[in-house]
Image (cartoon, rainbow, N blue to C red; front, top):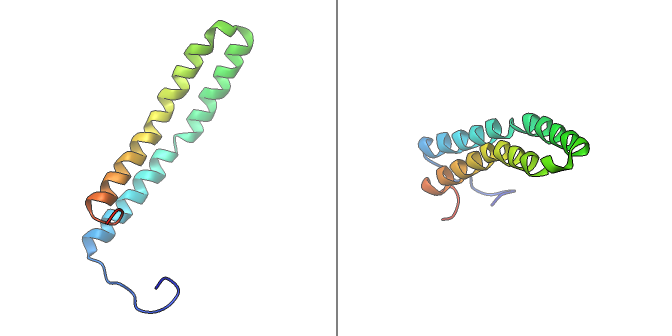
Length: 86
């Protein structure tokens, strides 16, 4: 089990896949710094000119796509190596 008992041996390739998925998630979440700056700038622009709301949302969404792509790639790695989902 998780807290006691026998430890399940896994192949080295599966371990590398888990490490790679973790690195992908970690690096793609580093975009949060830029996302915060973009969102703050967008709010400032909307405060001055409300008609720029759509542009501010589009820019914030474009920055978020990198994190979503990183998550999707990690899920594909985990499912492909049977770490997740079976």
